[in-house]
Image 1 (spheres, rainbow, N blue to C red):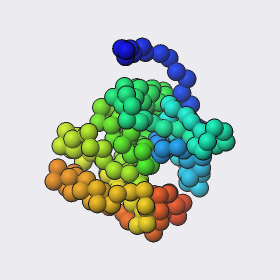
Image 2 (image 1 turned 120 degrees about the horizontal axis):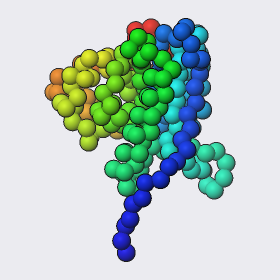
Image 3 (image 1 turned 180 degrees about the horizontal axis):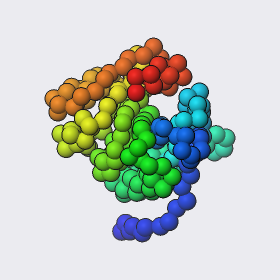
Length: 216
């Protein structure tokens, strides 16, 4: 048996809140976690919609039934199977999403915030490590810095933005020991960040999100 690879075109889906107008002052790119849909994830941000913010939520390229053979459908950014090619696919996809933003907004003028939740945190950092687009705030929520990205290699890039780590005190899906080790790794690399522990689980509480935005 031999493994073969062939590049194919695929239709990707994304959701937005807001209109591409001159009123937009801030653009948010938000990446969902494993098993979520972009539409349901984007609902977390509706309370922030004030007419000056544009939200865009790409959806993972792999979809599946989250329970059994029917019912709710979620998406994944990648698995351990053929992981390097899946990473290449979704980084190209996010490059295309960013091109769409550049066609709609002056990305050097607006504030650009990026947020990854759970599996979306590693997805976000892997993309940023290659794209190095200008960001105002990088938010890693209920996830961690990926082991396969060397913090030193993008230290100057990360320090040119503001990095925020958000962790729920009662999040049972996070290995808090490993999270602590990765935080130490960032500190040793000289990367500046703020660590925010909130009263919650593996989630984005709307009140915690709203409190965070006051400091962005």
